[in-house]
Length: 92
Length: 291
Image (cartoon, rainbow over the protein chains, first blue to last red):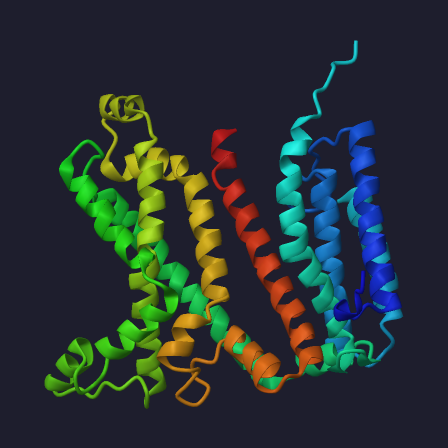
């Protein structure tokens, strides 16, 4: 199957592979240990899936703000996003 | 003892899963791929990293289009939601013949194709032969949506409200009809006012359908393209150039697929954020009162 029209690159392939792996991991985690609603530092009570969604969406905005406001390499935005994701998933 | 689970139901969602994968996920992945490359043609592309995102995020015309779009969607929601609820409240009960007439009349604008809506309103507002345009000009006022930005906005808002308020009204009406009569009887016994009935019975019971109406209307108005494109083409000047019109200018007009891909992703993230915020806000309305 020729996927040239999709114009794949290594970074995007890694990115989407990571997303797919994360979703598979979340599914297995959910089956093994079903989530419960809880209230952390976020202003709403959330499930594990909610926190993942919030973490991913806010990470996308962190990257956009970084790119739009600074000239510094985007790897710093990635590190900030990973720390933020961890905080949201653990205490959100 | 562990409860046995029948997982065959998952097979039933497989067709939807495949359709969504091919109609949404694959195009989205392609757009992500395009957004970080300079595409010259089939097989001719160069990796540029975040360059297009930086270019798009610092584009003044995009900022203007975004504020215009937010203003448009905000006005649409501010007008259509209360108006739709008011129409639904005024509609006759579902048992009568009047309700059927109302439902058909309300559904009519929703049946017209979007590009035809634009054409109808071009004719309707023409200053020389249009019923609305000519009537206003006869009164001594000058109205020309092709030359005046404010007039173009008024025309667009009228068109949008006329086209889509019926959807809100129909959804609200469906919500109202699903309220059991016992609620109204209890309110009557308690001597509740009309406002109290609306505030504490009808509005909470309509929350589900109003969430759907709000999300649909926000997404549709935020992604609007066909009607303003046909009616004003984004003009006069750039006064009605919304995000979608500007995006098409970049993607199709200039064939800049990389910047268009970056623009599309930012557009998608904005819609996603607002829809999530609206959804959460509406899900949490009245929770404190129920507790």
